Amino acid sequence: MGTDDDLFRRQRLLQGEAEAVLDDLDLAAGLETVGDPIRTGSSALGVMVKPDIDVTTACARLDLAAFDAVAHLATRLARHARVRQVTFRNDTGVWNAEPDKYPDGLYLSVSYRSPRPRDWSLDLWFVDEPDRQPDLAHLRTLLPRLTDETREAILRIKEGWTPRPEYGREVNGTLIYEAVLDGGVRTLPDFAEWLAQDAPALKTDTARA
Image (cartoon, rainbow, N blue to C red):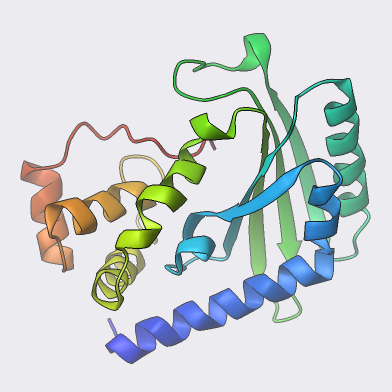
C-alpha cells in the first residue's frame, strides 16, 4: 500500500495538479459570473486519491439569468482545447428527484485532460439554498475534525477502495469519512468489519452525481 509519506505525496501531487487544472480553465472567474464558488469534496478536505474536482456555487436565485450564465459558462468551457466534454443537467422543480434531501440545482460535468496527461472530472453545482447542500455541510462538519492521523486513514482506505466496482455505489468517500471520524476505523480490515457490522444503511448525504 505504500508508506505514510507516499500517501501524502500522492495526495499533494493530485492537489497541485487540481490547482493547475482550475488555473488553466480560469474556472474561478467563470464561476464568479454566476455566484459564489466554494471548493468542496476531497480536494477541499485534502484527501484526494482520484483526479476529481468538486465546486459548488451559491447563487442568489436559479432564475433564467442563472440558467443563461451557466449555459454561457458551459459553452466557454467546451471551447477549451483540453476539454473533451461538458454535460448540463437541470435539477430544479420537477426535475429534482429528491427535493426533501437536496436543494434545486443546476449541474455541469466537465471532462478535462491535463498535459501530464491525466483525465480529470469536474463536478460543478449551482444552488440557491446552499445551507441545504450536503457537500457544503461536509466542509463545516468534517474539515475541523481532520488531523494527519485521520487523513492518513482516509487516504489509505480510499486508495484501497476506489479501484473496486462497488466504489461510487455501495461505498463512497462520505461513508469512509464517517467510518474514520465517527467509527474509529483506521485500516482496511477495520473498514471491512465496520461495513459488515456497524455501518448504517448505505445511503449517505453525498452530493448528487
